Image (cartoon, protein in one colour):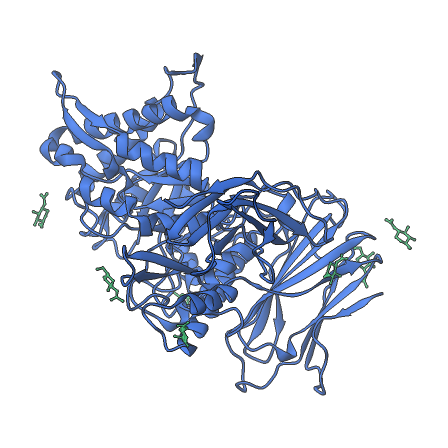
Length: 637
Ligand SMILES: *[C@@H]1O[C@H](CO)[C@@H](O)[C@H](O)[C@H]1NC(C)=O
Ligand SMILES: *[C@@H]1O[C@H](CO)[C@@H](O)[C@H](O)[C@H]1NC(C)=O
Ligand SMILES: *[C@@H]1O[C@H](CO)[C@@H](O)[C@H](O)[C@H]1NC(C)=O
Ligand SMILES: *[C@@H]1O[C@H](CO)[C@@H](O)[C@H](O)[C@H]1NC(C)=O
Ligand SMILES: *[C@@H]1O[C@H](CO)[C@@H](O)[C@H](O)[C@H]1NC(C)=O
Ligand SMILES: *[C@@H]1O[C@H](CO)[C@@H](O)[C@H](O)[C@H]1NC(C)=O
Ligand SMILES: *[C@@H]1O[C@H](CO)[C@@H](O)[C@H](O)[C@H]1NC(C)=O
């Protein structure tokens, strides 16, 4: 036995002691990797286009896409379809659409961000649907079919295999129901969308090959499901589906349930009660998978809330995932949970840079010429990255009591080594937000059997108040609207999980002891253990350097899935382009930074230059480096 004491025991007595026993692991798809938002501004072709091409919004998305591979796979953007522009009717009265703007944005999503859209069939496309109320189903079917066929012709079906399609968002709400759909016209619309999806693709060829007919699942009704009097559209659809479930136009039942006061338990509890009610009234729907598209701690993204700025929101998001996993395993009303999504990809605005429900803090630097945007990753962003490191088999969530009312949530996962203990292990420990009596240190010891191999290495990273909290850093500096370069760097140093401890494990049956006595609440600990048999780090791909402002760039790259589970940090190297001749040496510009995620913002200041060559490589927990990425040159205009 080799006990690794992570936090030294002080004078205190240990109040609770948890030792992991044997647990059963179940296959766990990463079901929480969707995010969403609604673009600001007017809802028509010009308005949505202006919002989606704005440099601030695109940088926000670049940052989200620069999370560890697999952390975010899908993005749900309301009114995305408005990017398709209605041109005119042809001689037969069939609309002709222009897909230029839609294609541009989809290319940005696919090629630069490597994200798949959740395409909601909602919009009025230059008035087509309101002008033709009697033929609305025909026009919807045509639009759906035309849009899919157009994309198939451009990308082929393989590139679109991860796309998700959904019906109109929250159709019972007047703000969304711009077509004034009634119960009957809504049902017709859903059937028409289903028809369009089914008819698309079958007769088309791509690069000379006939496309195989592929079934495209339809999600819906993306409803809030308040009372059936106030939300008749969504309830009517369920009623109809229950009568003849084989003819039900939707394949995955989607709903929106948020918390009330911001806790994960409320989200899960609300979803359990809703699904229990749905199954009671419509038992045939038990055959459909279900998804909560907007599983957020509290409604209205733009309302500033302190907890959304700091570590607490990160902890809540992780807890939301763990509790959904527990509910899914339990096999009750959430037994068929397919996914949850977080509605937190919004662009925050002054003076709520940190406190709105977003993944990043957004500073509009109006005093520079031209103005530009600066982004700081919030702890909830770091939390999504930590979740990406979980394995693909997981035990049920375990609870370790802290006191009579509070407990630590533990989720243990493994990957590889079928049947055995696995070649990779990742566990998240999550403290409660508080425990009584306030501020007394809690003396808890968690002992984990890390037996995965004789030769392995471990790493622990933490999210903890103040230390990994850029909001705190900003407040300490007086919360300036335009944080200067020094403050921005200080915030960025606090934006990743903190490396806590790492090292080799030489013996089978090693034990890891985490003692949370000295960590302020609330905290999250991610522990990873890698055996030498786990795939080695591959070279980083698709290195991209994007301007933030003069003498400042955002550098990001793509990770190879799997090989980065055992990553410790990245190194970013730069070689200045010297106009005088032979270039200078390569410099490690990320010296002293802990960079567990694939991005780095480089701001060398007034004396430095960003013009030159860049390359990056990863370092794993065994201190082995990956090959360097390709070298990319950047030149300021
Ligand atoms: C939809 O209904 C609202 C309220 O009844 C009305 O003000 C609006 O003009 C209608 N919109 C359309 C496009 O018919
Ligand atoms: C769970 O939800 C039900 C129904 O919405 C509510 O009555 C109950 O108090 C909730 N329980 C918790 C612990 O939030
Ligand atoms: C740790 O796990 C291994 C493999 O599952 C088992 O053989 C060993 O007895 C365990 N050790 C402890 C201290 O529980
Ligand atoms: C691990 O090491 C121990 C002692 O060093 C040895 O007895 C055992 O066979 C090794 N196990 C494996 C799986 O290599
Ligand atoms: C940057 O801002 C911080 C906090 O607002 C301030 O303390 C510091 O003096 C500023 N530094 C420079 C170089 O202006
Ligand atoms: C910067 O400009 C934007 C757009 O004009 C405005 O909304 C925002 O409030 C300004 N920021 C500050 C700190 O004044
Ligand atoms: C890797 O290097 C770090 C820092 O030098 C050291 O603390 C750690 O023990 C090393 N890890 C391994 C597996 O040797």
